[in-house]
Every structure is written in structure tokens, then in C-alpha cells.
Length: 86
Image (cartoon, rainbow, N blue to C red):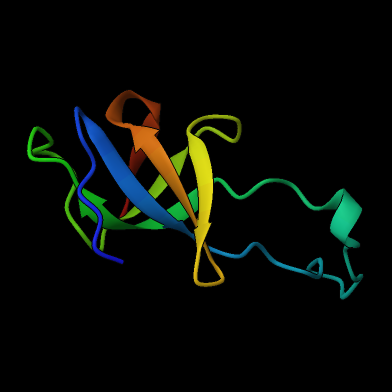
């Protein structure tokens, strides 16, 4: 996807959450939580502290979701990001 976020925003590809618990119980779709982790795929020119390919944690109910060619993305303000996973 060729996308350039504006303002202080990043485009994040959502990372799928686990479909089973540690003990092997399968989690049904209606009980799964919204993902709160993803990989940064695009960054606006105003953002300095996050880079493409960083894995970030963000608020579960923040940002605007979109789908493109079967992949789920979310556009987030940098203030909605909690941190970078190293």
C-alpha cells in the first residue's frame, strides 16, 4: 500500500491475536478482543520517535480502522501509542 499519513499519525498493520488460550481452549470470534498491537507500515513526516517496521502497542478503542486487499490496518495519532516493543 502506498499511503502517507498526514499530521502526527502512523499507519499500523494489525497483528492477529491468539486464537487459543495457554491451556489450549479455542477462543470464539465473538469473544476475541480487538487487537492492541501492530507493525508500523507508514509514518507521517512530522513523526520522529516511531519508524516503519516498529511493533507498537496502542489503545484498544483508538484510531480508525481500514481494510485494503484483505489486510487490516489502523490509522493512529501518535498520542494513542503507548510504546514500542523491542
